[in-house]
Length: 545
Image 1 (tube, rainbow, N blue to C red):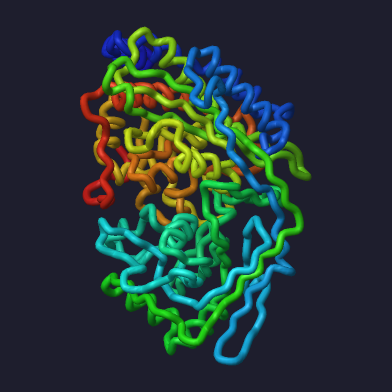
Image 2 (cartoon, helix red, strand yellow):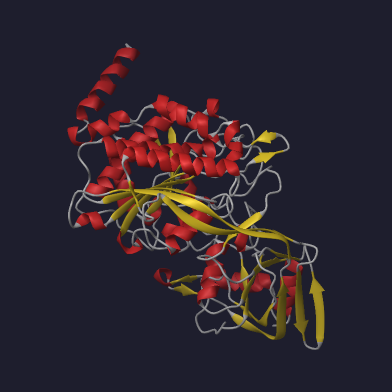
């Protein structure tokens, strides 16, 4: 009887599938996903580390598949958008921070002062404390209001105000798009600062990835759990251009003391209102001296192809499907295969390109399929894209980003505590960032009635993993674009050599891509695309659906 019911349910869902989208929908097949993923995660691709041979093979394979699907190249006649990168090793022993106060000067090195910057420069200026380094007009909060930081070194706390307050305007106990240090350095840069010092917010309770000792912004990505030491990478253009140093609580306390304050008292005052408490540190000057031991510049590539929309007017608008192809190369224990991270997302974008191209009916808006470079090194390909877009960002209406869509969430046994994990995650999909677009969430939930996945929104309510800004949807979110990370969660093989193809849940991955196909078609074809809501709202949002 159970088998009969399952058959009848499947038959009913097929009967409900509109003929206009059925051809592409039916073309998404687990067997092809497995074949593609077996190739991408094989030893032959050597872990697809950025700027190494394996990643170059992946780039050429993706471009070839886009060409075979009939997509249109956007970089002249090429599917490749060059991403200029600087690969470097910071010299921690020689990198230094000099603090001058009154007539005295003292020099500090790691672990008190840790700097990652791709150039050897000397940067100096007076110090200004700028709270959490956040400018959020929609929340009525600006740490830079009433202070001048031009030509100065800005000192900021990690994280956000009121992070333990469930009713906080900063997304309760979750994260907003402002919590990330990369975004904070960009903000300081826009205000004219010459450098940034980041330090632990003293009232922070639970350090997560990069938590109370968050690393400087130039090297931020999703962490390298148990991987070999890999050189840092930074954008040669299109990213941050000023150095940032992470400083110890001891050094920060000394800078606050020079102004007659303590970090804990200042943070408490900010959290109470919340309201900025920015100030200049009197008679104090800082010099930053980043030193590198190795440095080379080379190009990686974003791989991008376009399916032009069918409507003469609306085809100027763009829906984005994205993922990243790079992983962590080869280490002492073997190849970091990266089947889930992010072979799954890469083959997902390619499979959807085929499905949309194969479908006779084309949606009204255009669809950009793009697989980004150097995500593991700090979302570098996607940060470069938003500063050098191949389609105007102001007419980019939504993004579906795939990163790890092939496994079942399970405890990793390491790192920050994971949010509550369901007893059975074999049919579960996490959606990260829909609190910035309830319209987006509505479309997904409506389409999911034909798919039957369990949708989970828990990551938007949790800040310990800082998931909101750990994948390639984040740079789009900074530009007011409804951008959501589709994610099946962490597992014990995350960033391990054991992330291999035989562990992929192909049935679930196929369902996820079918759901994404329906949602992407809806976004691209409906009279109005999903709206971006700058003031993220959690009120009444279920943990799962």
